[in-house]
Structures are given as C-alpha cells and as structure tokens.
Length: 221
Ligand SMILES: O=C1O[C@H](COP(=O)(O)O)[C@@H](O)[C@H](O)[C@H]1O
Image 1 (cartoon, rainbow, N blue to C red):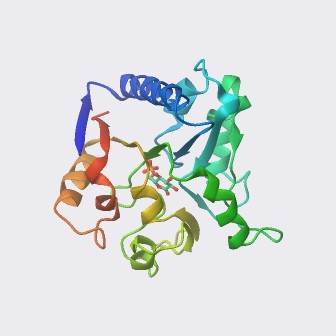
Image 2: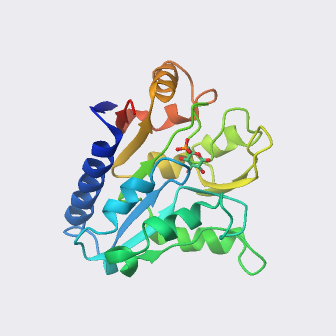
Image 3: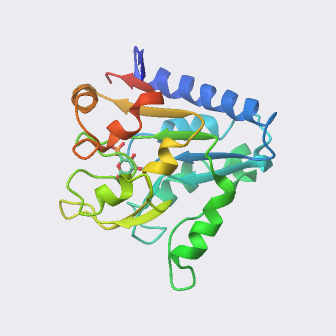
C-alpha cells in the first residue's frame, strides 16, 4: 500500500481526477475499452466533477459502480444518482454506464454476463467507511466471508448491518483483480480506521482485502 497525503481535500480531488484521467488514457493503448469502477457515498463527488470534464475518448470508457444501495435510482441515497449528477455528464456523457442492479427483468445471471467483459477492471476507485467497510463489504455482514472468498461470484447481494438498506456489491475477487486500485478518504477518523485495518484480517476490516496493491489518497479536511 502507498499512502499519499494531501494538504487539503479540494486539491486531492483535482489531483486524483487527473491521475485517473491519465490512467484511463494510458489504458487505451492496450485495451479496446477501459473499465473503471467507482464508489458512491459522500466522498467522491468532487473527483467526479473534475473527471467528467477531462479530455478523453469517453466513448471507449465503461463506468461501473463498486456497489449500490437497493433504493430507486432517483433516491437521495442512490449511488447511481450521484454518478449521473456528477460523472455521467459534460465530456464523460459519452461513456457507457454498466448498470449492475437486479430488477424484475434482470436477474443475477444476466448481471454477471454484463459484468464479465469488464473484467479485470482497468481501474478501481474505492471509498471506505470509518467502520472499515469498502464497496458494500461491511464488517458483521452475514455474507461477508462468502463475498471475500476466492471462489465468490463476481457480484453479490449483501445485507448491511445497522439498519442500512440491502446492497449489491462487487466481491473480493473482482476488487483484488483490478489492474490499478485507488482508495480515497478524508479526515482523521478514516485515517485511524485505515491504520487499524492494516493490522486486521479482512473478516474484521474488509478494506484490508484490497490494501496490498492500493494507492490510498488521504487529506485531513
Ligand atoms: O455506503 C457506501 O459507503 C462507502 C463509503 O462512503 P463514504 O460516504 O464514507 O465516503 C462507499 O465507498 C460506498 O460506495 C457506499 O455505497
């Protein structure tokens, strides 16, 4: 793991967006299309705002969410809603959004077939909660061990503890298989959680499953 510290979050978001844009651009030389998986939640909006204006061949970029909350796409807690309002716009409007949420017409088998051509992920950006969850891999979730197992299906429905809505998430093998991995976190509480996670097993600290190869981007505020 490499920890990259920034003097403020605003600067971190711009520099991280530039880094992702440059990795996308480089990936075109070896891939027909570039698959980038990104988180939802409260942190990545400003990265998306900058990245959406980058001058890239967006028609060759496929964008996925690392996880989704099982709420309607226009719900305020929907990660897709965040993505549509901050990333799938401006120049990035030409990108393809690969939607990985089951519904009446779309079962898990169909979603796995939709995900398969995107693997391995070219670029993975993850967030982390102060409880050390990443994507929707939560400590204490009844399905966590199955989702982290080497033979886990690529995508799983999972329960989040603490009264949160059920989720769908990319699983351990998909996250660990990404060609480039970044984690973005802000604040002392998450920095302490990161340091704790480095000493723990993924069964207690799911973020630990992907830290080995990751660049972690952190700013205090
Ligand atoms: O629930 C989620 O939480 C994590 C972390 O979110 P944050 O609000 O603490 O930044 C996020 O990465 C994940 O995509 C989301 O569904």
